[in-house]
Image (tube, rainbow, N blue to C red; front, side, top):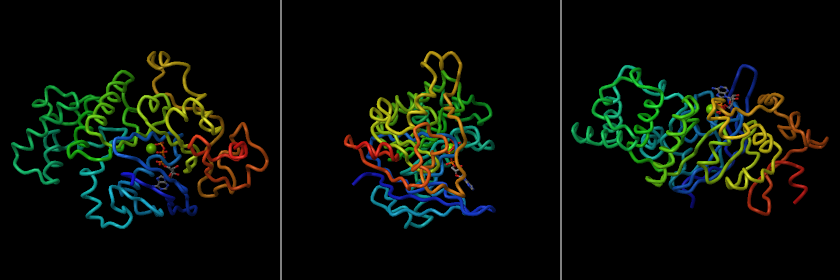
Length: 327
Ligand SMILES: Nc1ncnc2c1ncn2[C@@H]1O[C@H](COP(=O)(O)OP(=O)(O)OP(=O)(O)O)[C@@H](O)[C@H]1O
Ligand SMILES: [Mg+2]
């Protein structure tokens, strides 16, 4: 059985305007040591899918799934106490903005120490040794000095290294990295990305890597899940999705990437895809294809026909009427 197996995940929010279906029937799985890239425009449900795994959604959210199994445990059935134990110990998450994820009132040393203590590592000197070892692992060589620093005394890249050290403290089986490099300068982005990939291999962790940037995901992921309006529109190996995208949305995302990596290095920063049109209203979801109004390949029937995921001959799954018909 896969280390992580999610089937038919639905996330709804009650809002003043009505019920907002933010994630709709999302299924995926992950093996130990495997990297799943999740890509899609802003608001498509990448973060909340992962927050559901962490059990960190606000109380206005309703989460349901036929299966959300991690390492033999059914996440929707376990107690909040057990959830807290899993967080950090078996599943860790790092976020886009490391500065706000760290507590400004405590030094780096205090924060790592507290995390190790919560998870039962006894003895202050033992914890200090572990903390220094962790900092070295994330490329911080002057660890003894850094332990005394407060978050505001660190650069963005250094903060993200500390966050990664914190998230790895208990050797999680699954690391969720939600846009971990987006807030950083281009050169630092590349360093942090390399660090994450090296650590993922080193620790043989499963990793979910969330990004807007298909260029980034190409160098990290084994398989890719493309999301649109809270749904999976295409899922396959990185090779399949990037070199022969089947869904019109994946094609549009790829087409909107900058010409080359040199362009990026020259300072265009983040490759935010720009596809004309707006993401749909998730409260009044259309009955047919969610992409219909923005899709260059749509036909009349796409507007109202419910479109399911179809498995192609090469094993990838695609949610598009035209692709389904071509099979
Ligand atoms: N607390 C909330 N209350 C109501 N709706 C929410 C809430 N949080 C998220 N949503 C809805 O869920 C959708 C998905 O949000 P999510 O944060 O997962 O997007 P995302 O794909 O991570 O986007 P980004 O790339 O900007 O981080 C949003 O468009 C929004 O409609
Ligand atoms: Mg997000």
